[in-house]
Image (cartoon, rainbow, N blue to C red; front, side):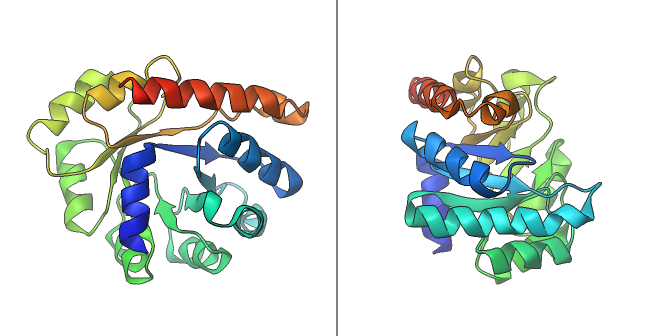
Length: 217
């Protein structure tokens, strides 16, 4: 199963980062993204609001139950083993973190999920990879851009990197061309105003544009 998930990330190249979207809206969002060709989502835990963690786990569970194998669902901003277990119990297929925590990476892999920890410098990237990460999330990439990722990728060409932070429909192809195995996209696609207004068709249209630009990368 882990190898299938890794292969899917490399094939599809885009994981949508979802913050603060729960219940019926989470399912509608998953369907809208799927209609636009995007089939991987991560629901992030809010570090400031531990009380909301159960709702995040429920969103993972709900989308997984509704969409089945059509959408691959994971958990984001996982910084400790408690959140990791919540995500695992909800059916998460992969675990994304903003940092490199060898304990979280090790447990993620041991429990059959795909590990995507965050790192920025070459030292941090290597530390994450040596700890067992399947992909290393280069984060935050927004101010450094595709040129930084390309420069890092040159000596570390054996490590699958994901570009996360500030990726949008206009620059996504730049990161793919720079050597990223994939990207993480949040608010630039998951428009909270559109969700609030029920304008999921706009999300579908923008998802199609992301896919088109990734294929041109």
